[in-house]
Length: 200
Image (cartoon, rainbow, N blue to C red; front, side, top):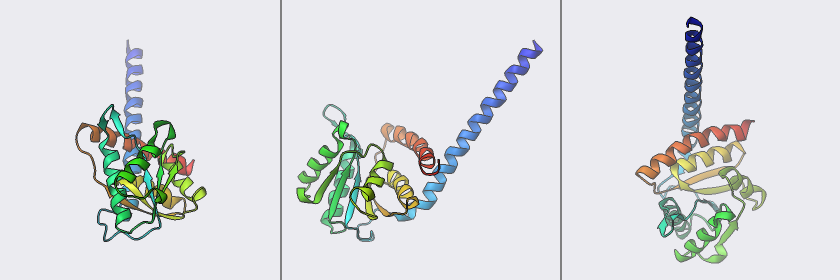
């Protein structure tokens, strides 16, 4: 009985230790990215610096049939605002071709007044990391403006600048409610993955 009790205590101690280590890792990665990248994000069009290229980070247009994803809608609105203000000259729409992300972004940008000739489609932006690397390697831009929600821009800016690129972010309106909570939770672990991508 005593032996069984000791095993349980050892298991409990190990489990608690692992949970604390994981929580510490998540907290560190999140804090590091926030501290480093937030100063490069903007809500104010008048303050954001000019870049020739805007990189619009993809997400699915629909949550389910006929229900538009607000993250998508707000990013489209922000990208169109940025273009019309003269702060960028072209937009690279980068996303997952299998979910039609680039095509949907392109179509909605055109509906919002961005000319088709100013939109370039990157259909292999399967991850934020891929979108950023391809912006340099395929499209030749070392300096660009990221377009997404602030939390996403912060992560993307951290990646870009650690890869030696000069990126700033224009923040789209964020989403509130249950969906936002789920997204925020996923983002915490996405930020841990950034460090694995960059340093391992």
